[in-house]
Length: 114
Length: 112
Image (cartoon, rainbow over all chains, first blue to last red; front, side, top):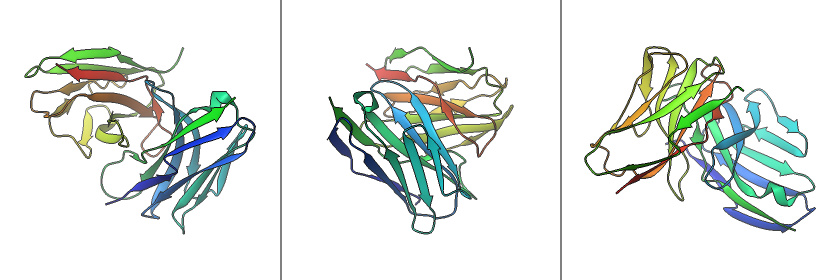
């Protein structure tokens, strides 16, 4: 069974720190990987999409990397702000066979202390 | 204002009733998806549709049904056969299967 794991499950850091969220997946045959943000009781906001042929993507203070061979992705948040507090979800679209939906990790709950 | 809308935001159902959750998109996307989110678990795929008049079961399709008669709409029916329907339901779409998915605001279903 294909799985996505996110570590840590929760993280609390002071404002201004740079931080890294980790995502690992069991099967390297992926089509793409997406990072999302979810605020309490809300839908998901897409942050970054990395295609399988790419190594990283950047958007503002966010940088996501992808290493298919090791089955890992990281989301780097620079100069964290209280508004970054949310749950961050990693999701993988596996290629070949089975359903074409995303396989999600359980998320990292991030709190940025003012 | 382009995007994905879901209605209602909150839905209460009595045991034994069928209910239908609405999902509409005006992004001209071909692919649409339904996911279920439970506390402490990752989102799980219920059904997906790559094109009008076609849809496929996801990982947890039992007790659910869908239709895709129009490109813009992908309603989900939660039937009485679904044993534990209380959850947060999220609809998503992408320009085609394999591209970036965008999500609606969700419907929270509670069985009384």
